[in-house]
Length: 339
Image (cartoon, rainbow, N blue to C red; front, side, top):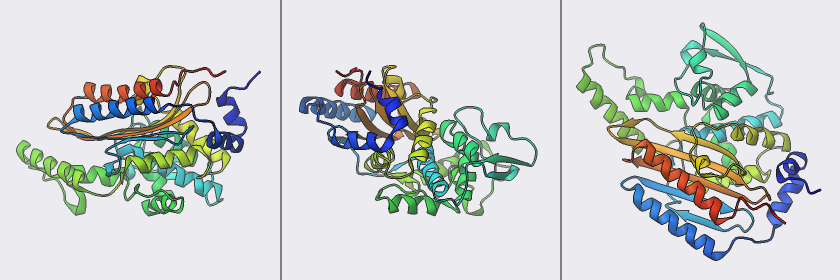
């Protein structure tokens, strides 16, 4: 009996990669054209926000793109490349998954998709293994955990250097979640919040921080670069077989929030990483999802979708991403069971 692609992938990544790179073309030009049209319509509906998407069919190499060569704020999407850089150091023997890392109370950063390290921190110090921090950072999107991992690899520049070393241009990691929060709060550069701050002064401060974040070039990626990162991860070009499986497993484990995933049929496996900023006065700086979709027959498609400066409400933003997921699944027949 023929193995499923999922079990085949677990047992033999290198051969799986070879099959992906040499698989016969199955997508039609009309499917790509319809997908391009659907993206164009969604991008129009997203205005005045900007929607950028890159879709890569790994069976054919065909790319479908909209607003894909400009840089977008990543927010928590950056936790996937941080995890990759950490696992590269595990592969090199510089750190181990069982190694314990001390996190101090002052290092706690609020924010996670589910209750995790930051929200359950007790006392002044806690110790976590590198592997626990990876789970928290990628699957649970915990901000405290990713900042601890960045410190463990000696800073964000190490992550960007790792990306450049593997030919991933257009994606950069310059800071952790704590620094991002200080930009939004306008407390970066040593600034503090006055104890006598009025509501109007608070709003003006938050407005300055919000605009400063949108204008900041750091922690940005193009959709093309994000897709390139995912393709290199999937095809085993970034990490060892074991570490590749580990990171993909963590991304499969991210189920909240559900964006592209919410438009996919249950038979499609999806490894992804979302990113979200807070909203101010009806505008959301970043609303993102990047991931790898695999149908029952092994057909794999990469999607990197970024929405910035959106005036749409949360329901509408989620609908944009669900529509992208559904359109991709339909265009490439990802529910197809194979011969």
